[in-house]
Length: 281
Image (cartoon, rainbow, N blue to C red; front, side, top):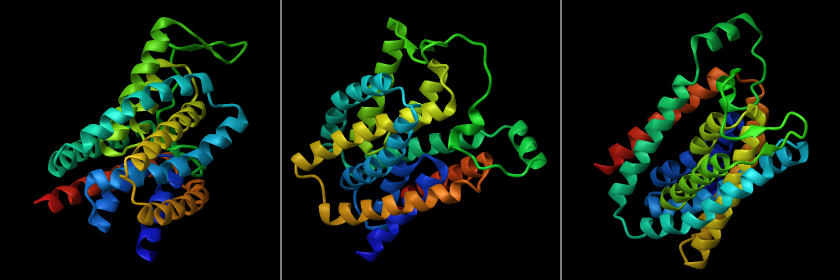
């Protein structure tokens, strides 16, 4: 029990300090620390991250920065495709799932490492290291390009068009499928997509992403529980540790620069991928 709570605390601290990575690191940690298969660890990771991400999502909703209609659309598509991913995960051998997860981890590590540019490092060396609001803050740069989803300057809401709805629906569907298949929340897909397709600022992007992750993860947990795939004896203490760690991590994250957050997370993801490959041998 103590070991499970400790693992949850570790994931929660990462999630709270960086603003991302809860589910994508919880599955490797559960497979390495508790010797679970990916299909066994995935529902537990989703349960933990659904509780932890809901805290931040509710805060964003209270602050009025969650684009809730966009979140509901993406989550709706995610909920539709999450059972398909879960169904496939139960029928694939563990080795292919591990290798798929390793590929996802390495992709996320690469993207996070390269999200920090020379200008970010130079700016941080010239200023006192101000608290970073999110892991993706280093990506927030002014742009004059047109977006599929434009936010109205007067109402602050999206101007809904077919390209906008299509882009958000596709994003939610892919995130939901991977959520069911390998137990990831999908933030590494949702955040870049919202940045590419909308003119939201990063606080709104991350808050909306967390709202989608919460809704999709909860649906995945319900489906897994209904099918008898959830190990509650492991899931409950792990989730409790994750929530507690998230609260502590939020305090820690205020003292870390965005470049340290991004590159620290990248190194953790790459290390987790390497350990999963070694264990597979």
